[in-house]
Amino acid sequence: MNDKLAHHLLWERIRSGDKDAFFDLYKELYYPLVNFGIRVCADADTSSEATDLVFTTIWEKHETLSRVDNVEAYLRTFLKRKLLRILERKRKISDALFNAGADGDWMEMSYEEFIVKVQSDELVKHQLKNALEKLTFRQKQLIHLKFFDGLSYEQIAEQSNQTIKTAYNTIYDALKILRKEFNT
Image (cartoon, rainbow, N blue to C red; front, top):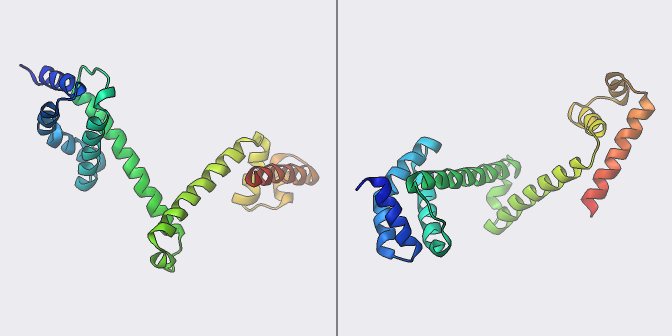
């Protein structure tokens, strides 16, 4: 019997709650999946962690699993998604450590304070993204010129072919919208 068919049969047994089938599939595919994960993320520990999460999730949701023809391909896709989530979480933590201050303030934070900081940074980014979506293209353009490029109103007016007053009013209106979005 070929591997694809054997994996399919084990999958069907797992769907019906067969623990032995789960452990058989785990023994068959754990190391190939870890090796695949290492090729994806170049980190054995992260790959092992993600593979463990994949198998844990499979067992926890075995009653609601869909039929799968190619189990190994399905698990590779599932693993890749888990790896991307783990890597994204690690990147966010790394960014939060960096943003917490180079002076080492984060070393004195409790774990709970650190998690709140990470989550609040993400919330602010989300709010800013939503607020920016409320602006017109021209407003976004002028906000970028003013606050990211650091141009004066005169320079903005010249670059955007507007009067200084129009550039000022456009930025003022955009800031009003942003302020409103952040205060709701």
